[in-house]
Structure formats: structure tokens, C-alpha cells
Image (cartoon, rainbow, N blue to C red; front, side, top):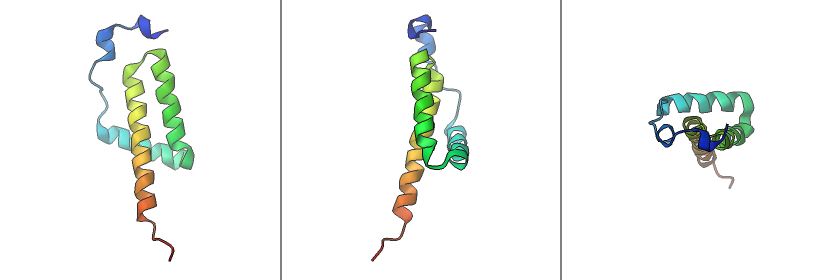
Length: 82
């Protein structure tokens, strides 16, 4: 199925997942895949973008962004070596 197989209206529907749902997916992905979690989420976002599923592309992109944010937070929390 290509992007042209979907109506333009479907591509702009409001996502059904909430931020808390995406955060839960991010935590689960990190717990199972560790440092690879962001790359896996980005892979699925791109896969769904190419298949024309805007909602899943948006959701996985959100998961990737949350994983990246959590990674930055952990790096910033580390005490600096003096």
C-alpha cells in the first residue's frame, strides 16, 4: 500500500494515543532494548511513514522523541567527574 492509497483526510486525523501512552511505550521499549530503543522507534516511524500510516508514524516518532528526552535527562543527571 502506498501513501497515495490513503485519503488526505485520514493523514490529518487527530492521533488516538495520548502522551502518557507514548511515554509508557518508550519506557517499555527502553526496558527491553536499552540503548537501541530510540533507533528501533525511529525505524518503525519511518516504516509507517513509507507505508502511508500517518497515525502510527506520528506515534513511533513521539516514542523516539520521548526516549531521546529520557536519555538526555539521564546524561544531565550524571555527576561530573572532577
